[in-house]
Image 1 (spheres, rainbow, N blue to C red):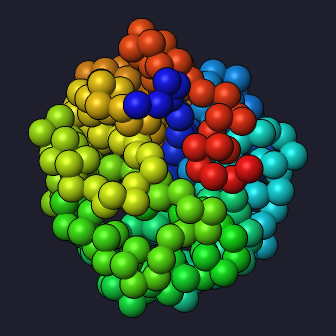
Image 2: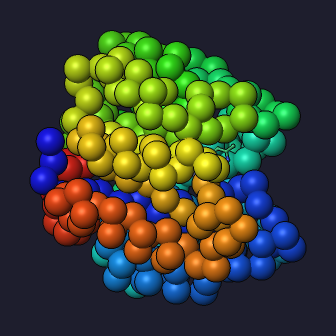
Length: 274
Ligand code: KMH
Ligand code: ZN
């Protein structure tokens, strides 16, 4: 078990609107300010969805490239771009995200129900993303929304070999309506099925299962993902005003479990980026 904890912050996502959530960091200035504060509170990896001038989700390559550069300039965080985007984004534009040359990219390991919509990840698309990340030297993080996704990851590794650098870092995203629930039982079933090549894993729970999932992850040797992409409430009726509140709470939980937030060097070593 890792002696310290990787804390990932997923700051923005593609689902909440600025009109509904004015505190959501959607501009580059807001994102950089958020990244700085979250890094100071213990986050080491930032999962990024970019918005346009109307605060709408975009996969515009210029904006993505500018965002990666700004985050690298302002922080020592591992910069991970979402290749999931929004459920309306094309496969082509999602593949092109890698051309912004982030340190890391998300790679969701299967199609899933996503509320009333569908988040499409057919196998040939996942394989193209996997191989492109290998070719460009981008370290993928495998997003697992459901038990079947764990087995789809096994298939990718069998077909394409190990990712760039050799780390197989997974992230359980539990509690999306229509996919696996945010429960300790679902998390532990997923962990038990992980491929033997797995080098580390983290977890987040959406909604009221968030804290049970974080606590289970810490107890079972996993790492933590938090952020306004996943949760807009700290507790029943208490809104998140800033991502840093979620990072601070995760860092306190990790400290209590005697697995404090890891350093930037430890995070890069975990992800085999050194
Ligand atoms: N916004 C979701 C459709 C990812 O970032 O890779 C996909 C998502 C996963 O958030
Ligand atoms: Zn995301």
